[in-house]
Image (cartoon, rainbow, N blue to C red):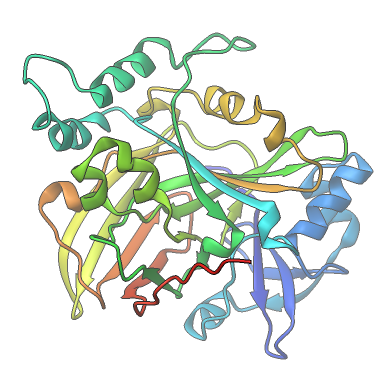
Length: 333
């Protein structure tokens, strides 16, 4: 496989944020003159250049030891916004072949076994109409909102579940990163490994609580993979407790394993004017068919989620913690 450009944000030994370019094989090097991926991408759009071309123009500097940076907790999110409120976090579900099985079982108890669940109906709509011809719009997918950039966590950071949550479960998947240009055009910067952390017990209680179950933190892998995503991506999702593996299962992604094209998912997200505001960042989670929850795993504080997948070279690792109970007080003015 041809080497693919990866862009990372790393804190250097002096405590400063730097942007790193890496082909996944040779030495990783700092990109000259920029301290954030957001600035790099903004410059590329302004110049009418690709990220790779902008990096070539800027030039590369010092070698960066990514293994050491990972060991010292200095790998950051692949991209951040100066104002996290302008980083929209959303996603689509029931997009992967097999992704309806666990959801269908979850909701079947609430209705007659003879009648297909809404989850199964949504999934079948995607199978039938989620891969339109280029330039055409297919059936719209399930869509959900997870919050803004303040919800995102880097590899090595804790994923914090709210005190009121009934579950904190991993969702191993891929996500696309987008920057909206000055004229409202969405630019896809690349893809990253992701853990679309959710509350599956709350969702199981009532399908209409899906929106509540998704308002949780999420984690992104350190690498922003620039260019087209391979049609077939195969990875492994693991949950460790006390250093022992309690769940391990492969997961598949890429369009060969999806009921929708990525272009169709992108269309139905960015067709809304509100999601094409100049300068905004977006991360869009593309879904998964693999959950430890579906295998009967009940996660506990201290459990560690490990997600890895080629062509990504670096794993996404996060520990589950639970926030302290903080009552919300509403005051009158």
